[in-house]
Image 1 (spheres, helix red, strand yellow):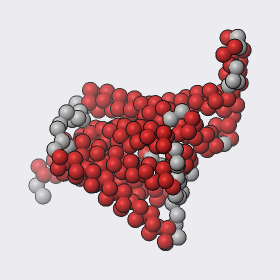
Image 2 (cartoon, one colour):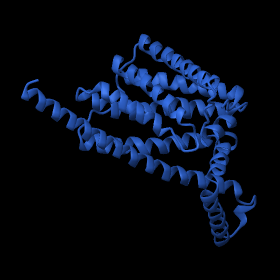
Image 3 (tube, one colour):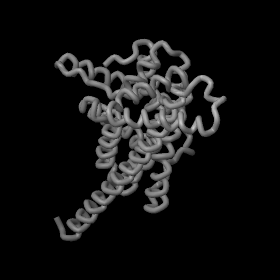
Image 4 (cartoon, helix red, strand yellow):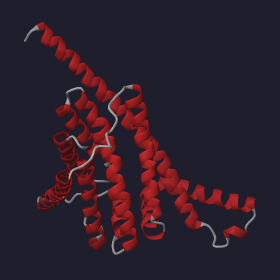
Length: 291
């Protein structure tokens, strides 16, 4: 290998490491921002269910004191039993106030897409996700069928793992969400709108539209595919859930990434993602949490 080629490879590897560090930093910042606002939404939603029925007739000072006491109780529970609070929040969100699901997605959009736009596009001049591109009927069907295939593939993996003696454990949020949707048609419809459609749009715009596209633009699509798929899987992971779920979700992200690379159309991976999420919710509507 010539010296010139060695120098080019060295520069390329340096750029990849730098971009990897930038993406990890941005994702960490976005995740912290998302957790902060999501906790605020969770506390507000739960507190509102604890207020007295005649809360409106109280004086301003009494309302403030009641609200403060409820917030303090929830603050203590966050320290001692956060899983119970999370379950309670998603039960409220699916059964009593399903519009919260949509509001939660808006928080996620703000926490991830705004920083990604500011840091990656405005400061680093990375390509902005192209959502103006038209999608052909063939591309639409490709996304639709791919979402179904990925869903079946994931369930096959979980079935094999169960046969081998390992039954993956979901996190508390997903359990509460799936059980809250079971037999709940209104919750299911809000779930389809918020979790299937809106989440599919937001997550694909972030992971494939911002992150993967930036690697593609510098000729590192293969590395970018593996890296962003890993990020996708482990950003959905939590400590109480099985590690295998994060690995399987990384494969899901890999599938969406392949679609984006080969079609060059972000809408194809968005449709696949929305289809996959819709099927998860459809199964939950009839069976709840199968884990």
